[in-house]
Image 1: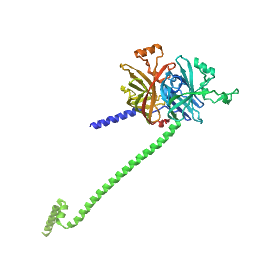
Image 2 (image 1 turned 180 degrees about the vertical axis):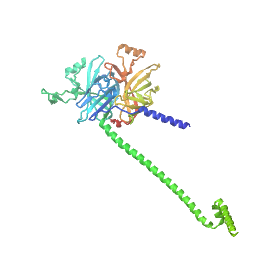
Image 3 (image 1 turned 45 degrees about the vertical axis):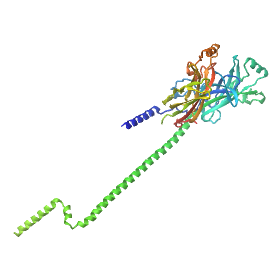
Length: 334
Length: 180
């Protein structure tokens, strides 16, 4: 009794869980485009000269890509929390560094734990290898509150889905002797005008055409440190859904067929067994019958046998008939 | 066809590089509004670990087992840890806040969360910290997961927390989502 109660409870729990899970998911974007989501964080900065650092980032979006600011499933048409998701640019706190051992050197490490959450829509009708960039600028603040730029770095988002960990190597431009002197005593440093410039390998000339930057005019740079970034890449597309569903259906059909086949095989087996059993029984009965029949041959002429198989009234009626016959015969004789 | 489901099974493994010899850790999983917890606790607190001087790390081995239903890609879960130190005189103060991104690819992972704590930059604050042992804490913990209010905020790097986590994902591919 207790066992059955327990089973019922478990069954009910499973049903409840299934009800809780339900079905449904956000709609994928229409065929020909793909939703790509990058969620991650700026973990830390390692190996910079100054202990107190802050990082600003900016997202560079190439052609064929755009921000997916909301989808109808989430907001029911009302635009919400745009400020936190898909932040185009932001700045971390100033983090004071610890000293750690890194590659057999004692270097500064400042941690940020700074989250970012970006969602893009990619146009997959045209093939292109372009992906969005994260552009970084590392700033420092010293004890006299002098600002300096400690480095620039860029990270092209991965095309492969999954969990990634990156180390972005940073560099900083080197100025003239005068600039360095100014930077040393008063703060401030040579900077790039716009962050997008650090990933551009061309410039626009007067006619508006693309032109390679001459080698001589590129700035001199020096190494600074590296930024550690962890991120998840997820993609959501209609085509993949369709393909997977098709495969799923085929597999399910196969499975169902397999199940039906097994059940049928089992049934046939049972039927065969049953038939065998019945045949056996019939045979045994027949054997019995034939035995009786053969044995009855011995008793055909015996009186006992006849007596036993004749109805009870037979003797009497026979006798009666006999008497009647006798009577009539007597009469006739009379 | 059921909604995609996500299982997070693992443990808060250890803590490293913190100053004090007595430590405990509060942890919480934060997630978007399109994720629903079906089973398991999303927050907890480890016991207070006292470390001998010879050892290099605190070991908590605090288990968790959470079952999510996921209805959108946005709001992927994150783990937020809050480390508290105990001074010799029994005073509790904050040793670090940290967030860790939960990997999306199924399998077992090892995450290291680098913690920081807010730093009082004023002279008065420094004096208060050194004499009274009072340290500034965050008033609202929403800040840990947002990029708001971070500008010109000052913090100090402390130790790190290690989390071992195993991820099981179900039915994601049927809705057209590629995890790995």
